[in-house]
Length: 380
Image 1: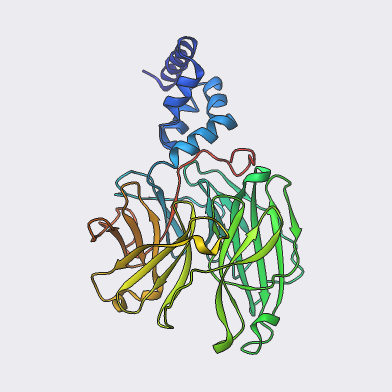
Image 2 (image 1 turned 90 degrees about the vertical axis):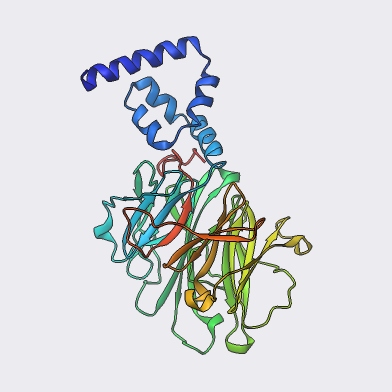
């Protein structure tokens, strides 16, 4: 049977099915399917294309996809790979038609199945890419007054602004014109891009020195960074949020702990909750979660992970709990060297088998498989 006749038969089948089954039931069935299958269905007929592109269907599919274990975007040098099978057994190279624009590919945040990709050090090219569908958008020039030059530092964030049904990218540039003198006096400029408005907006300076890692989207209207204030012994680490509704930065109180200087602190999101983890040079990682956002007393110690090997072998600074899987296991990244699954109930550990189709060393970004398009801001 030719592909044309096959498509015609499928189209007739869909028309017949939709005439006998309610659209709600059809939608419920289709939301359970992976993006790869739905992408093939789009070529069946115009009615199927319209059905799968309906903003409400995209939202329902995203909602159900969030109930599954995430897909993985793997970064090796300036190459990206995508793992979308449930066993995390094989990867495919992501074709990046914009790769010639970037000297060094950086993942500068992820949200609802879209990754923000940039070259933070060399230029201002920024892309939004859905790796499940291959659809990408090149953002317009941000128009910074400060040039991203050799003595500058850039950090970014990307998230969905639920209150406005909008996706936003924030880019912050610091000029290191007073090295090792006063970190709080570095010249700084920040701009935010609205996918809905299609333009950048100047939001002024930042009263904190945001970390070099991209912000983490909290799952509501907030982006979270690890930040610093002060220098040397007088300096301290902070958790800083950017409120996309109020367009302001704010320090978030940390859990009250008695950890010594040997611990390394990072921020994350677990089960949709703002979390922080403290990594010891010895053999433990403590994960805290804020049960009620912004309320200091709601911090709770959720996990104490006692790693069964000497952390020095993996460089404890690069150990990073990534996400909690649906079976309760915690996915931990040990730099580019290994991915570990920890079962808190059994206090057991296992190293994930090598993934076919990707180099042995890579960094991981968990991501949901979605139909959300970087061109359609109303599909959050």
